[in-house]
View (cartoon, rainbow, N blue to C red):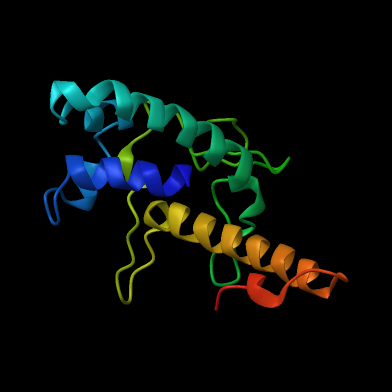
Length: 149
């Protein structure tokens, strides 16, 4: 929910086609919040705080970012390293560029930063479905908890 809540904030700050991918690489999460009306900023900061915590906790589970290619934003210990060096510990934060949060898939191109939240949501959906499948296999659990397609 935190990932999608942050997406909603970003989509409010950046209407469709409002920025380019290169601009997204130079605009921080904090900068995105500053584009919102002043009355929305405190709530957006709370959403960002929750999103950063959720991202940094869950993103190490995204082992492959594109098909079978290793996630370039994990360090050798499996921790988040958005620097791409695989040796640091640069996690999602208010100063991280929004390119890591804005979902982006372009046919024929692999934009690793734009795949981060897409793959994170995919991994979370798979975990969700595994839990529901195991619950359905347990005696006494109603079948109305079927996994999502």
